[in-house]
Image (cartoon, rainbow, N blue to C red):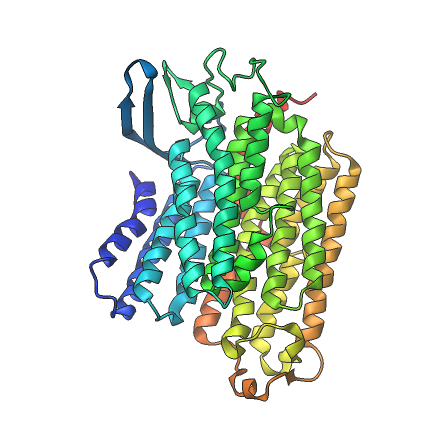
Length: 527
């Protein structure tokens, strides 16, 4: 398994580079080559998962990672001013490894969903492969500079994928997406520089996330926990934590920095919505896990209630907005804002079950939300319309489509036996059992589940029950049930949602030891 992470990370980048030298007219070749590349990436990630040892109990963050690869990348000396040292440093633990597998799987679904894209196919598939490498790079990077490089690089392919292949308002949506996420990146950049100047490996400053997680601070540095330096009346560590919450909160997204998401989803082509909801939002959540809470556990304890309140507001505000939508895709977009609020509540609980629930909910949402956008895409592909009032009684015309819709809608509203229930239950148990949070946090988050049931069930009632009806009679001939390609995408997603709902250990067995160690580190700062 030597260098397997490098193969998973850089294979799409290599193929994208080779595609530059192929004639743009060979759209079929680009399509097949992209499918083969992401397919190999998925197989390699599964092999990595099979060989991952989830029973290891780390005693420090330096012993928590497996499949580690480390080598010097950039070394620059500036004489008496100092030096710059950046490493190619990658590895996975029980938190990042399942996310790598999820990423390669969702990216594979996205390629299959892209099968009908023929216009400017060369550019589309090159950008898609670049996006693939960037996402994987975020989850495996153990050097903050490498993480930030991948985090930033995701913006470019996503900007062009929405801006060129999106809907009528694609220019507005892509620019809004770019500006919001760029703003969040600037907050993260400030913290990254401050950490580099504060953390040492031996005698040299370092971008190593492992050293940052283990707290290898230079005495008297600005982010040293013993430092008394204040910024705007707050400790430097508190300001850094707040910056990270804002930066990664935009990507999550959390209210009130969420407004880029509905526009991006509505205007993005279906395959890009699948990747955006299934993976890019998880990068924001992963950044909170790995960097904000991992490096600043002392501050996370102090600000637990504030983070939880932001999570609850996201749950309720996103849910109420979803309830008010008339566009099916926009409704699903707001449901993502609501469901990612549970991740914040689970993190803020600072309990083992709450952390595990937040993490499991990330994985579950990474399966459910792509499926929901595929469901919305099926209707749009046939009619060019997603307005709910334009459809009724679809169950009688498209029974297979209705079945998959029901599976994913009920998973989204937290039906027992499906994956959505497990994550939400664990988060609520963590919230109610947390010494850091008021019981009103748990009660308010529970109300969010009721709101999600309302908008999902109302959508089912409006679009699938009653007499068959479509607003435009010309659509009727196109209202055929699922094609083989569409079933090929939806069946694996449905099976995984059911499997994880019945056997959550399929994920938790990998993450339990890492989460336990995580909570041990945070517990040192809890009263």
